[in-house]
Amino acid sequence: MTQRLSPETEQAVRARIGYFRDLGVFDFYRRAVNPSFVTVSDTDSAVIAAIDTVTVTVREEIPAAHPDSALENAPPMPRAAASLPVLTEPAKSIAPKDRAAAIKAISDDLGNCTRCALHKGRHTIVFGDGDPNARLMFVGEGPGADEDAQGLPFVGRAGQLLNNMIAAMGLRRDRVYIANIVKCRPPQNRVPEPIEANTCAPFLFRQIDVIQPEVLVALGATAATYLLGGKNPLAALRGRIHHARGAKLIVTYHPAYLLRDPRQKKEAWADLQLAMAELGLKAPAK
Ligand code: URA
Image 1 (cartoon, rainbow, N blue to C red):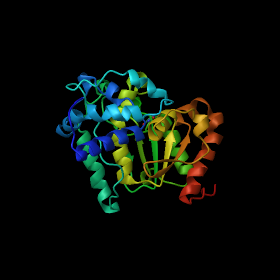
Image 2 (image 1 turned 135 degrees about the vertical axis):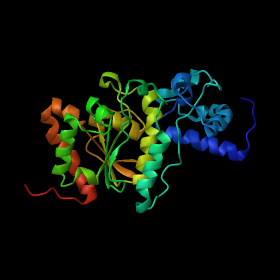
Image 3 (image 1 turned 180 degrees about the vertical axis):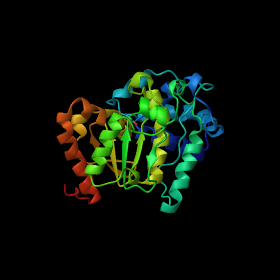
């Protein structure tokens, strides 16, 4: 707490904390401390060694009205056990010809990931699939049983519906990119815990930063929450353009929800038309 930081280090640490806050992670130093499923890189250790000093100031700057302002009472981050998710600086443009290799590098970084507890129940990491130069990217919540078995996103029943939605837009699935907030199947397909989503999502953000899609479609509330960095009801988010990681973001229903309540398909189609308008696409003639 009393450690003095050089101005450069302080700036770097502040940038890192600011980056977390952009992602909606206001209390990462409370949450990302479970030593059983975090690993600490040398870089992270260096940042963590400095971070207490800066978080104290940053905490004071967080508006009291923020729902997470309860963190005023948060205990200080235990040094030895602490870790941050792997991060990179947001959006440096990568030439289209280099994007496939850059995506592969992210997959290599992810490796046989054990950063969160979800690895314990997974069979296969579902990294993401599609065109590294896609103009349109879909983001779901997390793999289900079929995806976990095949290692590909949206290949089960919800995936078939997503394929139909993509075709209705006049696009081919292999020309878009599809990924999830978490890359490992949550037990019983439950919603990912914040610690899981916040640990995994930085890899998704890196994928987005490489692909630089013009339009992101968040499929369901979990995708919307972590892409926008805050929790809101889907109804409040649908029907307009948001922004995330340099892309226009449109929020719609998750295909699994549409399978349960097909009456909402009309609404979802309206959302996809919004995406198509942004991309200058016309629906193919029937
Ligand atoms: N549901 C998701 O959110 N993602 C998948 O990949 C499959 C089902």
